[in-house]
Amino acid sequence: MFSSGSSHSEIRSLLLHKNYTTLFLLSRKNALEGDPESEFIQGYLLEYGLGVPPDQAKAVFWYQKSASSGNREAMNNLGILYSHGLGIQKSDHQALYWFSRSARLKNPAAYNNMALLLEEKGRSRDKKRAARYFLLAAKGGDADAMNNLGLVYMRGDGVPVNRKKARFWLQKAADHGLSEAQKNIDFWSARGSDSYDEKDGATTHTATHPMPREAWIQSLDATHEVKRHKDWVALVIGVDHYLLKGVPSAEFADNDARSVAALLKKMGWSTILLEDGDASYFSIKNRILVWKGYPLRRFLIYFSGHGTVSSSGNPGLAPSDILPSGEGAIPLKVLKSWIGQSASPKKYLMIDACFSGGKRFFFPNGTRPLISVRGYSSDPSDLLELDASERRQESHVDAVAHHGLFTEIFLEGVRRHMPDPRWSDVSAELLSRLPFAARSEGFEQNPSIRPENSPLLPGYIGAHW
Image (tube, rainbow, N blue to C red):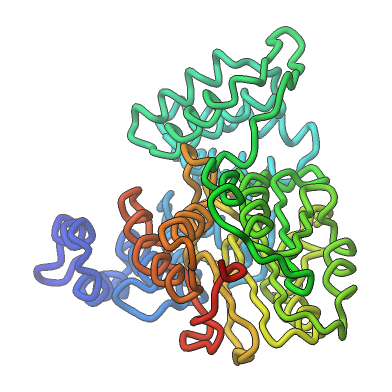
């Protein structure tokens, strides 16, 4: 039964026009009267904090009520919250239960989520089941599943590598308006050096693409006389491919790191580059702590790859040997404590990784996933920190530029302010240009500069020319 003036059509109209405050109040009345669709809307608004402060525990309550009444969307979303442990104790078993109930009601999105959860486990039999569920979801019209199925065929996860089928499903997803599918098509097209044998699924790497791609970085020595400083040390880390199955690739993270390392080296920094398998937990730790107490003038750490969350809920970074469960992460507090043991009065930390939450799927393509909600602590005055995104956002990539958006705009900002780029100038570029670039692709991403009035901001990024 509906309250006066509170029809389903009116509620859907408010949802369509994003009038969330009115929608919350209006659907609340119907939800208290037991209407499953209004119960679902209450859960949805509370989960994302739309028109009301976010409260995932209350979102679970309303999803459970709606799901118990047979609402398939509520079942699917309840499964997502169980899979992440948001508002309720994490349980893959319960997540699969609710996904399967929703899927039986012909919800293709639930099949897609079942597949993602199984794929995350990394076992061969789970990957085969995941491929079947992706196919069911794709045939049901789910664009995300079409994209995921295309990647499954491209990688050969649970199925033989089949580039034609991969292209077919990626194109169908792109035709449905999914921009990430088009980015994946562009990405694989650009990797023309990789050839696929569709008979046995083998991948032959005939050549690697040249890195870095920025010709202006390579030409810096020819146009400027660089002051080189042995006591300016930069440790640049990029983890694209992780060592253990079950941890997805962080697209273009290695390219990010190589370009940043090349730039810093050309600008006078003594640069150390750790890539992929070389960037293990202890390798990163040892490379930072070797400078403990050493009188450096400047010390910079750059990381591109996955952000993650530890079992205790602390945000951190994913080294190359992280476990699929998230164990083995480098908590940010620990990383900063390592950096803080350097005697350098000027320390810099740059992170192109996600520190966010609330997405509706596990490993969104074109992002830097393993997602967490970031908490902030007091900022030391001798450390300038630049992060790719604020909480509840993701660090996206540009498949054409082969970079994370944050890194791409950082590099471009340095170039635009040559010959003497300052941290303040490039930070301003990031704060103004990155959100605009992200919105043009249909998502929100705002970089974080901390502390906002750091005494390090007026300084030059490179050695003064």
